[in-house]
Amino acid sequence: MGGPGCVTLGKSLNPHCLVLTTFLPWNQYTVWILRREAVSKGVCTSTVQLPGKVVIVTGANTGIGKETAKDLAQRGARVYIACRDLQKGELAASEIRAKTGNQQVLVRKLDLSDTKSIRAFAEAFLAEEKHLHILINNAGVMMCPYSKTADGFEMHMGINYLGHFLLTHLLLERLKESAPSRVVNLSSLAFHLGRIHFYNLHGEKYYNRGLAYCHSKLANVLFTQELSRRLKGTGVTTYSVHPGTVDSDLFRHSLFLKLLVKLFSSFIKTPQEGAQTSLYCALTEGLEPLSGNHFSDCRPAWISSRGRNMTTAMRLWDASCNMLGIQQD
Image 1 (cartoon, rainbow, N blue to C red):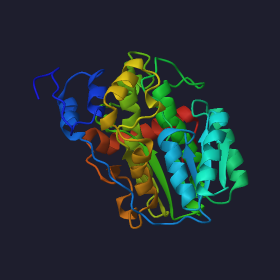
Image 2: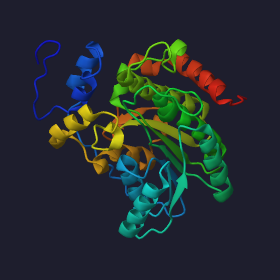
Image 3: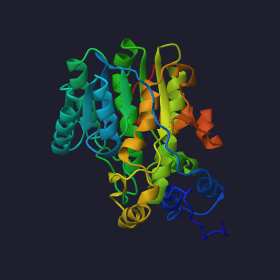
């Protein structure tokens, strides 16, 4: 590897490194990512079957979420595909039913950019189901031009983090009633480059769409740890995951990144490969002592100091409750 701005490509380099460095300043974490993010394809080897279990996967109409839902359906679970586009959701559900033979694959409307939609989804689900065993907060956006959700939240923070924070909160009692149960939050290796700027959570003072993605993924790591702390002894455990660099719709807001992904397609995971760590955290027996941990390639992954700052995690929790109008006990 040469100096800043010079990258030597080899078969071990995952282009997620390149994706990040196209819009992020060079610093120690960028260099760390270039060294760390090698192609590695962990596989979930769990043989656990899920008859009678109820699962929600957000954003399961495409990509990693769809493959996650398919695997869980194959194991006999009753799977809810929670997504904004019902037409795409129904197409995905039909495909999953046909391939798995499981007819208990259901599609429900969920727009994570609108808290009214999130509350409506949760209310309908709780009326429909008496149990919830696995919640996989999979949906996300990346590299959006500056915009806000229906509630005035910056789009990355609103969809990737706050929307899932609210959804989890609304379903938490059902998860406790169904324990042992699990919550899996999709993050990214990019969280190492994130910051939680409480004075600029919604990008109104300054905004970089690449960094906004990183901030939201750091929020998911901190959320996972604080949620785990609060759920201790309830039988509900929670994990954050880095799925790897996956060929999916996540890059739809950047033509350059889409071209970059195609250029280095041989280095990039398929959606099925990208789903493996989510499945590992949702299914692996005996994982409960590692609740709150971050995983990559089906094994625990290192968390930088920002991702382990419990003061920031607790403050972010309180700020999130205030923004979402959640009354704390």
